[in-house]
Length: 249
Image 1 (cartoon, rainbow, N blue to C red):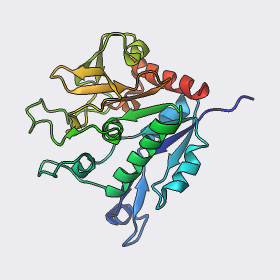
Image 2: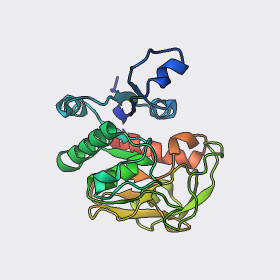
Image 3: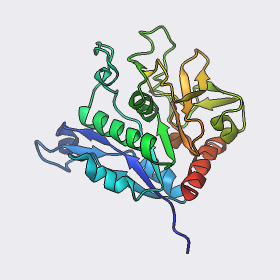
């Protein structure tokens, strides 16, 4: 029997012990690492084996795990500290988690420099991929003059705007269309795109919504949350393409 691809998924980290206390699962002073079920669920649905990548004290521990993986998903979560891209933090910036910032950037840098492992970035994951390669972010889109993109009151599977996909891009070929309806749960976004990437999609108000690394079998990211829209047949194209790349890496 052919082995299923093993796909690593980055997780969230929080030092707030209330997470455990209010759920009756923990005690005071405990820290927590956690992940939304949607990511694990969609990896299993496409026929992969999901492995949560923990945030470790020493990166060589994580490097040992990366060597065993067939693909990596850089997930959504907290804002990325502006310190990571050389800017001061404003009052518009959301909650920051330095431990996750550090490890996500280390993971992405390692994958950029030394492997051909397929990588899929989602929401914060796309922003982290840009920052790791030298790009910058808008700390808050509304403050920067763009439309509101954090449509938190909408159901997770419901599209709230469209993305215009770049003709000839890998992402456009995956979805097979020029415009794509998507959900939206972000208030920060890419400002200056890192030079190694190509812009592959943008919103109606010209916010970057998809990027990819040219000449790589599969190193791309989207700003929306496709794992929340799995019931949409067209969003499944991204999952299938990612799985096929993981099988062939």
